[in-house]
Image (cartoon, helix red, strand yellow):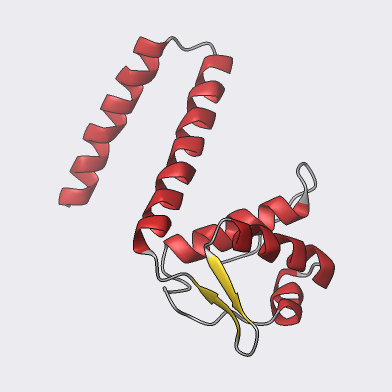
Length: 127
């Protein structure tokens, strides 16, 4: 998974989102030990302090647990991981609807487009 960071939002919040995605998609599995702050910062091409701030946020949300002698690990709480997945999905959906409204679509038009896309996607999945 690539670290696609951009300047329009705080870097640490983008790092939090990427790490959340890595956790909910299984890139980092429940109970996995995470790489060190320095290694993650090098991989993402960011300052270690910025990565530390992102990891501290993940600790506050309990997705990441710090153990003094063995570093940071991903939570084994599957319900918390699923809830984080649902929250991220809700954010994407809200952003999608906002963008579609900005394009001038009504609620009904948006839902019709979703329905059409869903049907087209079902055809692709059957192939």
